[in-house]
Amino acid sequence: MIKHFLPKQWNENVIVWHLPYFQSASVGFTKSQVVATILRTFFCAWYAPQKHWLANNILGIAFCIQGIEMLSLGSFKIGAIILLLFPTSNPERPFSMIGLGVF
Image (cartoon, rainbow, N blue to C red):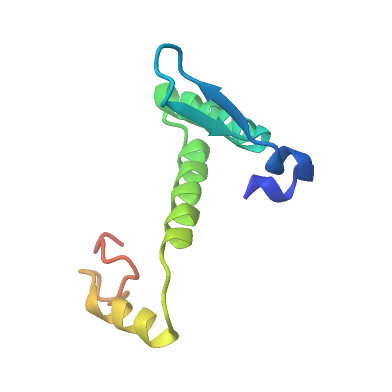
């Protein structure tokens, strides 16, 4: 998501780092991934000792966006079926998209 806001060269040029003593093991990353990792580390380091509500919300939004990107629904019908298969315990909100049943 951050790659849209950074220069195009930061996303195209892959930096490859070979592990010493293991020629077959290598790690490839871009500059935009390094920037994103620094930001993620900052929020996790902020949240871990303080349990601040804003850091909690930012991390929650990040996990939700990642989950939505991984979820590939073929149609609206499939989304509606998933919504109906996972009811919650709250009578005011009878259905939950992910089925946690908490809210």
